[in-house]
Image 1 (tube, rainbow, N blue to C red):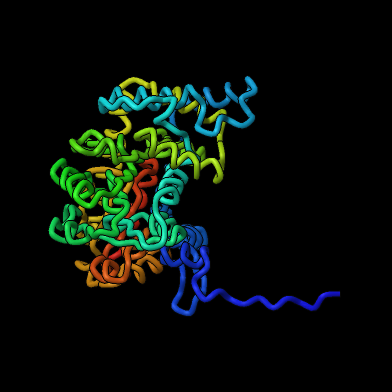
Image 2: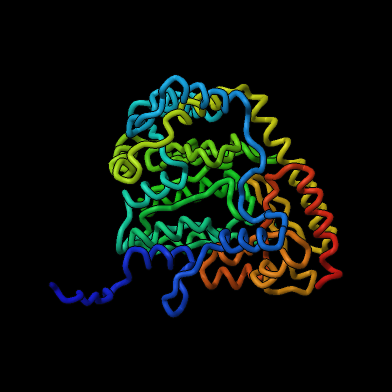
Length: 409
């Protein structure tokens, strides 16, 4: 019988440790924490609070898309889809890009289907970056970006987005590029701030990417959820197409976040590199859901216009309640989220307030500092993010509860 093997910790951080550190989940003593989403969801469940933390709808999307999924299941579309996705969905994605933006990706070689946008982002970063490379994002940033950058062993650099409009400081953006910048990972419309970046900001990113010879990966999952501002894909800008990978998904547009159907488009050689990595992550996923989303992408323009108009009304309901509560409200131009400053209530620590809010008034939110590195966390220390992708009656009740906050602090 062999004696127990003694395991020694590696001198360098293990991949899981780099991942946790990148997502702000690794404590100073190396202990592993939980995501802020899990923490706030647990608090909401414990207190019976309305959960306006995590960004998922509480209503299903269009009935015809659900019917298409059920029909696909009944017809036997329940085995592996091709690794790059069902042909009908790849063709639907290409048609969508042409219809809305004038882009013409080849569905055979320049489109792949992924397990949500999250896998597309992971596969793209793992395909192109490693130790010694830098990946530049805006800050605050969606937490999965930091996690995958850490997993890849690359260095995560940031350029700050500044209230009230959360556009970048252009001098800081330019200074953030270096000779080691391999990828600019750009989220537009932007989570968590709700900013929709104008042409001049996006064009400057392209110019800097050309200057430093780096790739652009764009996360555009909120492309159809904008309010009075038009979404402009980076790939449509001069000089961008040959170096840009565009990512989107069905979850946010169609309110089927649990189906995890995403896609990625770009130049053939870049898409082939990502597909090489992607096929060893999930290989393929969601065969009947892929067929259904092809149906969704072909819905008439009125559908896409209607979802943004409906969501804008929900934004305004919650924003009015937040103003009544005494917060300084930053009105978003897109996404599911509205950010507020807690400082007018005399509160400087949004993380502490987020942990108290469910018990105080029965509403859960997410503190913005968790989406930042330490310097950015200090800059956004008093900011909270609320999701408004909920039923109107839920938002009205949340607004009423929030209006009582000042008297309970």
